[in-house]
Image (tube, rainbow, N blue to C red; front, top):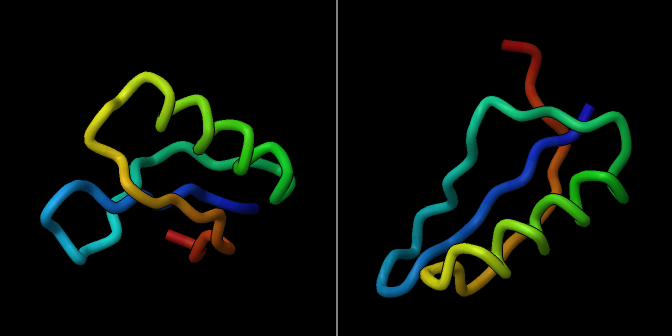
Length: 52
């Protein structure tokens, strides 16, 4: 499982939410979609999700 993380303007921290994706590709598509809708995003990545 993968999750997306984003960075925002003037912030060095990575942020994510509870959404999980089966593949890295699905997560990347979701990250690009979020970045297109949320103008504060300056970087994104797909990472392996920890078992919460």
